[in-house]
Length: 157
Image 1 (cartoon, rainbow, N blue to C red):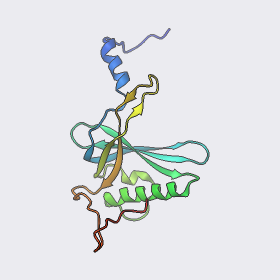
Image 2: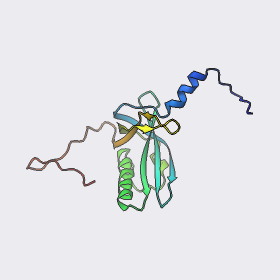
Image 3: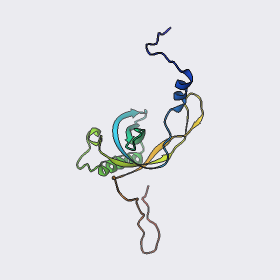
Image 4: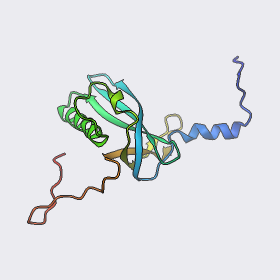
């Protein structure tokens, strides 16, 4: 038996936090700063950098950005390195990125999109959020370039 030093007084209220998991954040652009990160290894030569962004909208909500660092698939590594470089560019970092803490606390904007997930314990479908893009604070939305023929050019990935 465990004696709790901080007793639970309202079981229903505390139980609601169990299902809350990650808070759903409505899609859109948000000003944010990186506040933490960690490397996760998934075996077979796969390593992902998980960067935690704090939204600067007065709510202090967090959302994670996942960046592939090592993977047998070279394309995933190339995309991960490009993403990390893009984040550095968005916050005005110049030079090499050797340690990720040089990116902490510097504002940028993140585009949040819906990404539902299954709750680990209950299997319930839960609303979730993910980061889809990054840009400098105050930058206007990207507009696709077009050639004289009027066709839209898109990145190769």
